[in-house]
Length: 361
Image (tube, one colour):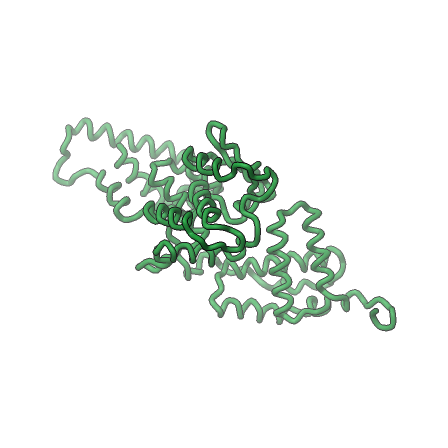
């Protein structure tokens, strides 16, 4: 087939054959099906855009890859997305080197972009009224998006907003993932489908469990609850349902609503309900409480204003001084216990917590 029946040299072999082998390698490692699909998709897209047909093109592809990533950045693609491109192609190249199919890693000179400097998109959570409106409107929708009916999508959004599960975790769920008759009812994400590669068991509100029990009745226990390829066009799907509910995607401050923003809706809801930072961190499954409090918790100005109303008056206390003083001591003691338990809390987080404690007292 190659040159009168002789096998080509290794570097002249079609690169797509090796991508397929890498896919089989990931499957053998037990990686989640969605992760494998997305990784190989990113690899093939990058190699195709870089003009890599055979392995030699990959080995000599540093300049082409540089142009590809630069073009993506100039086009306004998010830093996080570009980093995912680089991670996928780099993992493939390093596997090729371990297999002694390449001698040079074309990605070795590249560094990931600073996600913190990418301020193109500022997410916001849904308000309580918006969440209700989105659920009710989508529930009645006649639109079928990649196999998901309006009811399917409404239940998907409800679970995302009441559990904080990420898109990839939602894709992995089957009826077996739920224990809706338990006390409390729970949803479980297997370690291979969780972002931090650990098995997660999360409590569900009773109202959500009741809705899901009706929705899942009669379903096959091992089949995906939300099957199909909706997940790689979830942004388009979510925007369509927001538009149908007449909910603006971008607000007056330039903050946007997107599918992942439903996780911010969940964590902000915990803060509004008065859940402690420690519990919110555990429910959000974050390793750093500052990420929970600063990145995913979006309290409105009116909510913050109610917190600072608890500060003492400059014109004298309206209650006996000894009562006011005892409250201050109580707040200081509570805050000190939190700081001792979480010494890495940032100054901003400590200040916000102090204001909230004073308001609650």
